[in-house]
Image (tube, rainbow, N blue to C red; front, side):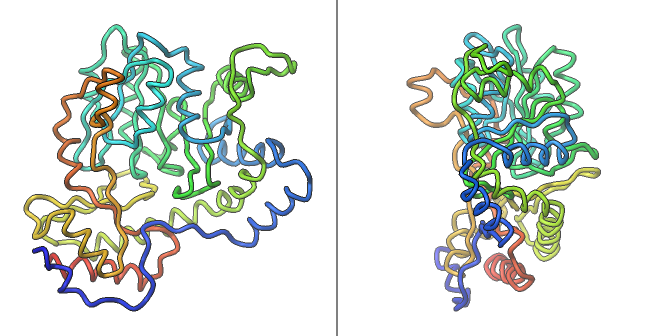
Length: 379
């Protein structure tokens, strides 16, 4: 099995990357316009980005900040969540989700996940709620929306704040409703995201009072009166960064359609491969396909890591998100007193998941090559 890659024909073309960033002339023109304006800090481009995000998510307010982690911290802060409070979230996520909770002094509690969507299991969330629980933070991982109908019902019954980690899910829909509109949404525009500004984040909400507090918090606590009215930090996004987002946001519907088409081709092409489970898209939902993540189950001909190695030799990039659960890092247990959750499904996923290329820049030949490479070593 270790020589599985020898079964593949080495490809002479450039490798097929699991993520790719390309900016067109519209982006270049907007960035140049900002540079020539002499106003490169937060300004009209940021406001235009916020307006575009608010329309996409279907909310009244969007507040831009300097990165996705900062947006999570800001959401927790303006809700008054801090020391002594608990936040229920997923252990199967990027470490930023956990770091944001720790940054405000709160304690994370970890619920298990659905093996098909990798998102929070509502029943597992409900079982963890105590008198100290203040919020639930579902993660729309890989672009798949969590079951927000059930999670929102739990939050309402238990009087919990809902903070959605939408870092990977701009444009995803749950039963026709955009993620980020069920509570406070937190989006990331990091370099590998579907829409990128290099670094950047946006919060979404329908609550005008909350939006005002978020704007004050990102700007050193300065209110509309230009006086310091509250504690705040410098979390501002620049117009240079925001300018790069506007053409991408204009094209978002087409970008998501192309990713969905590539995902459908991959799923059709990989259908029937023993031990390989392709992504689930639940009825009535739109998966944003930030990642196309398969499960390499124990019945598969190769292990996940063997499959990844074989694909690398075939010129196909892939990625593992995530090899560890959020609470597995030793420094967290030693320094932060993190208590691991009872999350057997999430634990199993760390040895099974593998993300294949799905981005909008792939050609049909690229997708066919990915399918062919996988099938050659697994069938």
